[in-house]
Length: 502
Ligand SMILES: O=C(O)c1cc(=O)cc(C(=O)O)o1
Image (cartoon, rainbow, N blue to C red; front, side, top):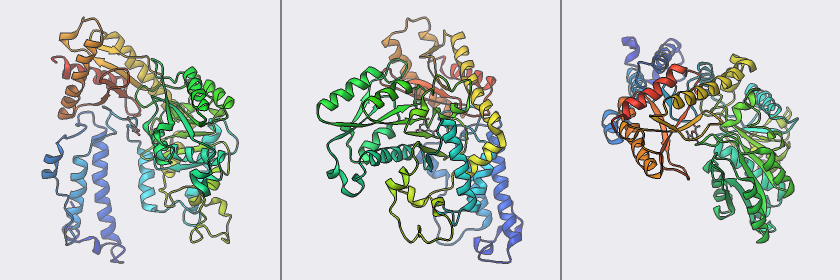
């Protein structure tokens, strides 16, 4: 609670409006921080629920989200903060296995707090000198880790936009007059290729950029979720025979559902043969580039790519959002997207304007997503980050072992290459029944029931989904540094408790 005097104040009694109110401003902010710290504590307390689930209509009655005519008091604002977090899912909870981004890295969060306080745009060195230099240091380090000298990179608002920047740069590199003349300037129908396991944002590039999804060829994958290389070549030849122009191939390093890695070297050979741009969507699997134990063979050949998407907010646990897109060739981003808005990118500035980034992107305004990664990386060092990625893989291997040891009640769908573990839970009545399509259909029906029970109880969150080969199955993700072997055991035991009678 705020002191009585401060509680009744409003935001207008604080800085900047009330210039003398440094004490009241500090008191208000310290109370907000207390609310945040309570949430951090609860997030890390395994006895705390992950969520208080309510259906949307019910949630609307619990929350008062109205925007009033008159300013509310500072005490009300503190209560608003507490209520908001009370009903927020604790995505950093050690029993949250629901998304590719799990966990709450304390230093990265502190970085995000500073980022908010600095509140700067990232389009020019002029207003973000330290952060721009930080971007240059971290992004060139990431390009070196990929295996490149030179090149260029940018942070984008998520993996989907990173993939879009790769598509735009590829098309610009190969058809530079598209920028001025549009499709009329193209020598024919462009075609892109990706696996049927890729992230949907790759296909949306075709829609957003006017290629048409008809010309985003989904290459079949094998039973491990890897692109079938012979199919890629066959489909490229099929399109060329129609007079189409294959120009872009996406290889996925860590698919969203199964965590599969396409064979980069084989795909790079095909791209070389047919003069296609090779983009690697390593949004999810990119973190393993830090690991000497797991980088090869999963990411072997990544240095042959023309562009790479890599999201530190996924496997590396940087706070949302933190997505990077890297190009082997420098100068492409700027020539592709430059509009030279003279009110921002004056050419007569008193400093080297190559440090300005706004003209490299289609965004103009760009959020500062670098500080939380830079601070986090310094807090771990390269050794620490490598250990963290290895630990996540070790925990996934432990989970596979535990599933195999309980094969009466769990059916492992495939040996994972990453921290995605895909499995069915087998309730009592179906144990011992031979595994076939009919049984899969039954197992698929209980996924949503078990999921509903775990959310009502607030004890666990594990995702489920069908894919192109099978009906609903659980997909657990271990990407939180909080997770231990005991948490993995809890996940499996809790699913058993919630689903045994189904
Ligand atoms: O950043 C994430 O957590 C994320 C991004 C996705 O596109 C898909 C998923 C997912 O399927 O969990 O997670």
